[in-house]
Amino acid sequence: MSDVLVDLGAVPVAAGAHAAVVPTQGGAEPPPGEPEFGKASPVALVVILLLGLATFFLIRSMTKHLKKVPASFDPEPEESAGGSSSGDAAEPRQP
Image (cartoon, rainbow, N blue to C red; front, side):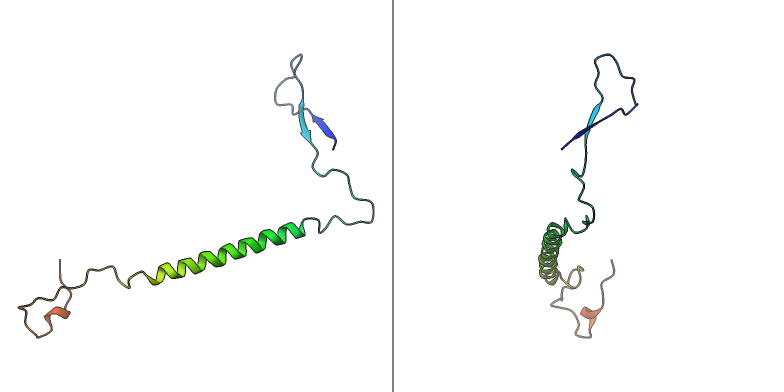
């Protein structure tokens, strides 16, 4: 792998200071006629499959937890023992 010296020009170069060393990104170029496409596809396929599997288990867990949630968070009306039987318990209580 070859390193390339780059002068960023942000600060003046002082005596004894060195330029920033930036490594090259691709290494050697492929021979002519050979496409660069498809080199990362096996790794990307594994990553995508793992993300899909994690999503499946997260959705399944969320579904289980949502089944435990009550339909309403309002307190249940308390039935009075001495109340009339005309259906007063079915009316919502006013605060």
